[in-house]
Length: 181
Image (tube, rainbow, N blue to C red):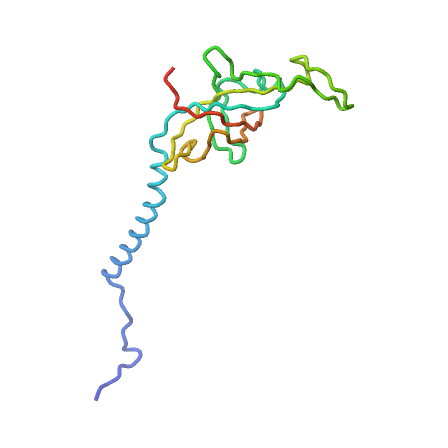
């Protein structure tokens, strides 16, 4: 006849060294998967970043905007939506300032409907401008340009940006590797 052990005599499962090793291996495997898909991707996107020249245009802004009061060479530019750093304003060309401007139109319509010819510059003048900024980035495997290895931009795209003093919507014209000057 078999004797049944009393409830008090029954032993509960013990936690042993082998159990600790198995739990530790599971934790290491989960951490390894996390690093594989998140950290390595982040590190590889930050690798091989180079300086690029981004040419842009901006349309129909006040002629007083691209002056020493609001937009200067060396100003930092940020994406307006998330505040990420975009780049640094530089001169358009070797002998030019921060932006080249042209009158946006030859005529202006007053609030009473009267159309008058614009005498550039005057207080009602609107201009189109082109400029250039230097940013750090790389081209992704999918072929798009990534500012700081994260934010996608492309030629023809409109991007809302801001500096310390002004917010603008610019049109990306060209992205090229920065040549040593």
